[in-house]
Every structure is written in C-alpha cells, then in structure tokens.
Image 1 (tube, rainbow, N blue to C red):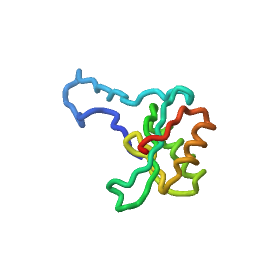
Image 2 (cartoon, rainbow, N blue to C red):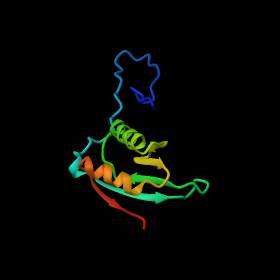
Image 3 (tube, rainbow, N blue to C red):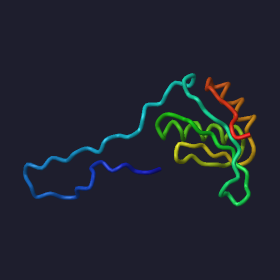
Length: 113
C-alpha cells in the first residue's frame, strides 16, 4: 500500500511564521454500485502471452477498488492485482465476473470483442 505524504516538499523550516500546507486529497468519492459503469474485457498485451480479465471504469477511492478486486479474485479462485484504476484478474473469467458484478448491482458491459 502506498503511503501518502502529509506535507508537500518541505522537510524543515527555520522561519517562525511558516505554516505547513496539507497536501490535497486527489481521490474521488466512490459512486454507488448502480451508478458505476464498468467494462469487462480480455487482455493479452504486454503480459507474455498470458490472458487476463480487466475490469475498468471504476470511480472511487483506491481502498474501495482494492476491496472489489479482492472479492472478485476470491470468487474466481485466482490471483491478480489492482492498479491505475483497473482490476486485473488472471485468466479468462469474463462471464463469471460479469455475473458477479451485476449481482452486486453494478452496471456492467462486455468490451473488446
């Protein structure tokens, strides 16, 4: 898990009137499930010929994305990761993930042929 810096760039200051500026939070609030528009696709690019299932389009915090990714990986019984706003599940699980997400109330579409 990536640690967020509390202050931006300043380590120490001798100025008595100096006040630290808090770094702005750049994460957006997580939308409710029925407002999310997710896309499920198969991908082989830059993965050494291995097939992965990608879930894209999630709008929300990285913690919520991690939790959803963990749930999908557990239900499919495989590994994977979450990065750059995408959930990567090892193997071809498009139909299973589509069903799991629609059961949770997400709006889901198959993409990429």
